[in-house]
Image (cartoon, one colour):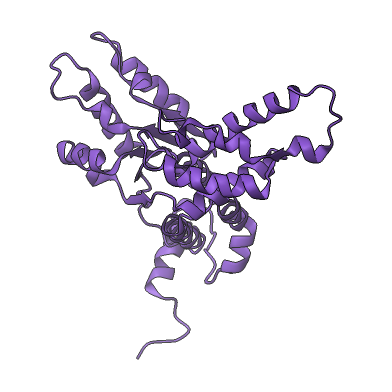
Length: 319
């Protein structure tokens, strides 16, 4: 019959480990998850993600799942349930302007607060920072970037450009081999996030199975709806102390619908660029009447003409 007062096998193992280490420290038999979460302040990061990014519900849900996993892993460590660290390398797929870089920054903060990376930094690079142009150039470039990113997150945008099989003199494969080695050997001190268009990333992973086997979390970033793009625009304007007049807001609703049908549309990035041009038009409109005494409301308000002057409405070109 089992003696209820006898230590469990796992407890005995941990006691033995503690004695062998000469510390005599026995892990606790319970952990307060609520206190652990409050101490980490991860909830603040998740709240910031919700407030900074409109929409993206599937992405936010997945980030919360990952945060929960990391919280439990931290609890396991406190209880002495030592095991292999989880693989945290990720793939972000989606069109430009869907918040991938912002989410990477928040991921880095979560990892840092929960003790999975030493620094909450993100080093963002593209192929140019990793791949050299002549023999012997790629390895030092890639290693220098890895050294800079160590202890945090390395974000590689448009990662598929590392692989160019049609060019025999391309040195991207050397960078790939170095990255794969470090992703495995230093995975407790570096998290790599590969980002890019979904279809191109699929081809990249098919050509480089070593990457796919090391990526634990694949997160797809959907395009924003028209209503979400309008909300993003109004949030951006609020942060800059601007606002749409009622007529301008209606004009911008039309602008969004038209702009989405034209080439090179980049979601929130295109919205930000559009607002910058509208601010220029507003400034020119106000300066054109120097005899006018302006109020704060005048300077803050974007009017319908500031929106409708875009060439998007005349279909002559993208603007």
